[in-house]
Length: 282
View 1 (cartoon, one colour):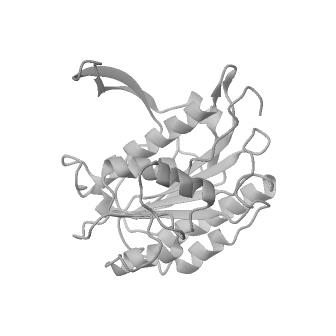
View 2 (tube, helix red, strand yellow; view 1 turned 135 degrees about the horizontal axis):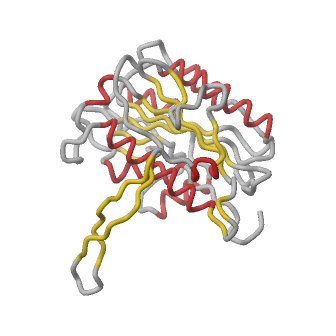
């Protein structure tokens, strides 16, 4: 059965984020106390990278179980982690671990063991800053993603299939991305086709939808288009979504519409829940 490749330093997993940086990403997002979509997405991206670092941490340091990249698309299409140029959009996780832009101190409420909560200060690494300006050149971003994924699979043909997560708040301004999405999904290393997942953060008054198995519950035409562009969840990620409490059906696709900030973080985590070995090897 495909999507069973073991992740190791010799066969790392590819996690590639595509982030809409268009002007409308500066608009507020529902359920985030006036925060913009760009800020909420940046927070979710940084949490995801931190989680990947923690998954890769061993006694001897952070091991390169993941190669991670971010392609932002707005005024231009370019790598968004540490200003890397497009010729090197993927970065080994150990390098990201060593080079955050800064470390913030944040306050988190945690249970005190007696039915109440206490404030706890935590360190929060920041690798990606929110950006919002310009059009939505999603087709161009998909082109770069396809080439990035193709090069990765040529280098690591036995690795777990690459995962591409596209976060957007509106329709592209440079054409129909359906064909570009299909090209990404048709890239096929030894363990199965590359995976493309989509999340739509729209201002339209439509209900949140998580991992639908068909278009019937989607009332927005662009949401339906994103559904068609998204991969079916492979077994491991399907079970991860169920374990998180999502009542999904067979054929569920990796697409979420109008998620709140908490669900956005959960979606990114589920979409990348391909685990490295638990022991000291690998």
